[in-house]
Length: 304
Length: 229
Image (cartoon, rainbow over all chains, first blue to last red; front, side, top):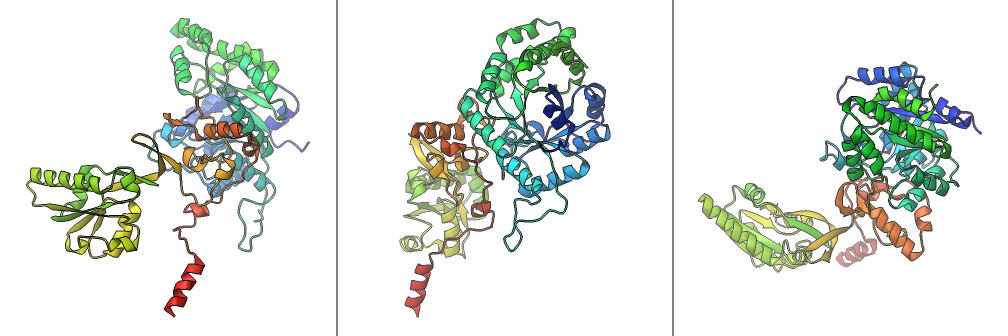
């Protein structure tokens, strides 16, 4: 096994159950509160923190600057990169920039279509897909890039990056085989870890994990913290491959408003607890409710 | 075939604004088949223009002609009207026809009456769907005859993304997930191994990445030159 390039890689290699968090840069320049929350509630509790990349195609501050600020505050970032907004020139360039700034974890994603966001008139790029992005990262790591010099020879990098490369999968998609085939391709293209789409059905997740047992990369189960019964219903209606069971919706609906955060943390923690034995970690997506992370870890039996 | 849709009348009127003598020119090929730019639609549009002009008190004449193909020099000989005697030609062809007619009649403005939308086929009564993107590097051999460049909203080449939703695309519940169609077709054909192969990043040069495209049959060019000599 090659030497770990990040704490995330090291922790997974050590066989520890690993928890990662996530922040989303704001629409605007005021990144302070997000970083403050990360420092207050995530630092020391999670191994690394993902920074979303123009999440849901809603224009906002970039992932790379969020990663840099996390690093400045002693928090290890996971640089999320979608292929929606940048062609291979910009993606490879940003990977070099990220490495120069000290970023070591990258999560390669396709990205929600621009039609989903607040600039639906924009031209979607998708020069590479998520598999192509992983191939691009591997190429950079080999000291070259996706291009060629005028004589047709591979380009040579002056200074070579090395990343811990991640990808995503949707375990509870209605048709799961295409998801598994794509995951096999991502692993073949160099993916070293998986952070999944949100899972609320431990039984379905267990089945999925058995079906991907042949793909030997660690899996962090994704948990999106459900902030209300309304949000859970919305996810069932609108988020592909996500199914919140009725029992959880009822639990949220019955919770008094002042107790909602507590219940939300309880549910998320319970899910992690139930799926802990099936995978190598959990990826907590709190959508701004970073302050529930300590309670989730407590409820999951993972409090430090 | 090339599929097109009629531009809104207001937009057409705005583009025509200063012109008083207009030739509405239908095209007898693709746009006749998709019922947007043939002789019948040219007649209809001319009638609408006359009506709109009357309502606005404008002195406007709109005459109609139609040729088999506006994208071919030889069919221009069949024009009954002389485009250069009009203030404007409103072409009911696809963008190719508009462009080609503009070249043949450089002294008169040739304006588009349609928006050219895609390469498609008639899939149900009154419905045309996109099948090809004209990317210049066909992948249909390994995708079960279903084009991911045209029929995946993201033109992905390694399979479905996480936005596939009960067979539909995240972009719209009325839009099929192209990659799920491909998956199902390959499964039926017993060729799922095609889906499992890693596909390297595409060379987009043939899809406008290298600028304006052109097809040249060298042997024909040579014959023509020899004939001239």
